[in-house]
Image (cartoon, rainbow, N blue to C red; front, side, top):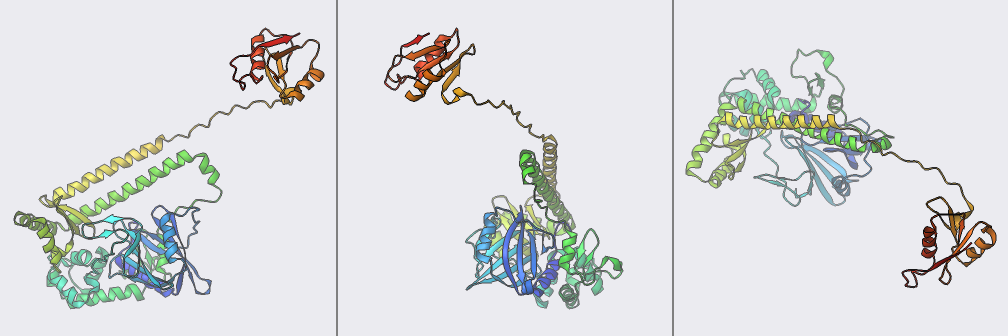
Length: 515
């Protein structure tokens, strides 16, 4: 069942079934709608249009919410367009019961695999036909595999629920947990579906897994998988969304006959925030405030998800307490006589039993990663409580960061606009086309720019009370002082400055006046 945290493997099975019913489809364009969310626009027959929303690690479904493409698509979206745009979708596949979807796309003579990881941190990986990674949405380096360009993409094991009756029987025979935990965690079916299977098979959920009739239970597992494909009847309880009811006593009003699971999920999850047309100018005016607020909100969302991840890890540790304690004791004993490299080789060679839950080994840290329905890091040599305490400390750290980010948002203040001083527009005057200035006591001084203006100044604008000033340099500007001033040194500097003396290599010039 889907929650706001994400989808289950059964949910993915129903979604893939509905997507395949829409074939044939062609990829029209790929967008990154917002940080961490991708939208693929698909075209079908008879002008059918679909939008697939993908949030790695959380959700993937067809959405009917309007979406405005960004003006500047990021590099990963452009790379997907280059390889996939115009390509035909050959099919949608789920890997076993894992929360992994593979979209097979054919374009020209090439086949591409777009892998959607909807678990943990999630990812979107573009691979060629041999599963060589062309480019991942996010680069990861794990002990057992690398998700980087050029590496081979390694799919995890499908899980016992889809591996056949013999593998399922062997899985139960080596399980030391009760049946409901074995199905929920070991078979990756989740708690609600594990309890549903126990009820259907008439098995007490606390019964030891190795003592259960595997054939009867496996038939119920097959019926569950078939129901996820063939009898989709979405149910939305508000806190969760299921592809079909798991209890017969649920109110009929909560079910939606005839509604697709994609549409039910589209109503269940909140829509992707969109930038409304016409707000660009407003955003620019408050760009600093909006940018800081958006950064803090994104950080708070990230910290909140990390807290939820730590809470799930602690819950898994204590729900599988005995298994974790036994595993830690076994590894602690083994490292006294063997190297970590030997221990890692032994763990990888095991096909069944508790060892298969160990998915990574870190010799330098003396730690292992274990799959308990959630990827959990265990430090060998520490107790279950000590390992849980590390996650509690992480939660404290993230809560402090949330408090800090919230405080920063409260302190955001709008940057005050700069005060603009408006100057009165100067009216056009007769002397503006000449060289001119005013002395410190406000007397107008006018000079010619060339011989023609020199002559015009003398003949047309020189009056009886004016002073005639000229530098003793050939071709110097004629200067007229329109009135009496006590600052003749300023007039002399003006006349010398436009005399051409400097161009001739002189550092001073003689200036005389006639008045």
